[in-house]
Image (cartoon, rainbow, N blue to C red; front, side, top):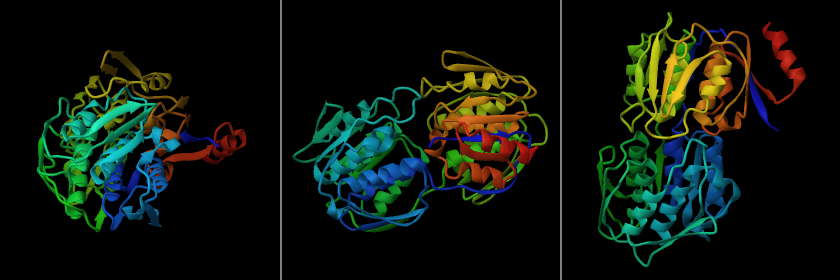
Length: 433
């Protein structure tokens, strides 16, 4: 049963919101958890679709998965009986490829279905495979599966041609029990890479330099039990920061690491929003129409590509002309047509969006093209005049837990209803007037 969001815009967001665990860190950490034969406990896990799909896939190869609660899980990899993952849903999540590195590192062989994920452009995995081959593995792609095996894995010096979060994590996984030292040069520096490295180290791995562009991994014989709490999600936090500014609200965003949000905070302050940092919270408020700026997405610590649709939506309502340059993914402007139907004035030329700020948006029926764009369109609905319906919200639920509930707790006027349910739609409209 497909659901949609119905939103009546115009309410400033006020109050507090608690941010969940980082989805992208959790996906790497769950894959890493199967690399020991002892029990691993992970908490602050976001309860979102991508995570639940990965847990089911981990169970499908025989690992023991025990849910202790919506945000806590125990995993034991000693019962794994199979290194082939052709589980149907796994093709839908990009991070399924982390199981390649984890299984290859532990069993010296793995077979995983080629991943899919968000439709925001091709994300080739050649750097991952280059890394596996450098460690001495044979890699073949046949019948839609990636098949990799090795007699032994030997540490090596690996230079990534492009900064890749996925490849950096996958090579860390594959090499942490290889013989000798592996050095990853031009490594990605994202917070979730540091989190995966910290988790592996808590299991007995020897990884140094995560968070810099050079990571050194000395292979160990085995990994052991661990208890670990995942870092907060910088993109969920950033989305609420933008929503607070766009609705001219005042929101305290809790359970965050302010340092991870700096690229977003700086831009919000630059266009006139107020951002206050605390130890583990940020407060964002705005009372006037905001100004314009130039943004270019870059690998961490630059402005995150996963925040690009949200910030563009905010700039569509700001004063003056802004430009947003997307340097990471080529298909990241598919939400622009949807915003145009709400009255935004955005022109896309190649990888640059030129945004002429308008004074207001009007409600429309729109469709989420992918995860982050979907969240951005909800923000647009929150500020638009009248009613907005957002379809294909399964994309949004891949990465945001209880998005509608967290928004309504801040005073947003929105509800999740079945698609084409005229009665529920009318009920909502009657209720909110």
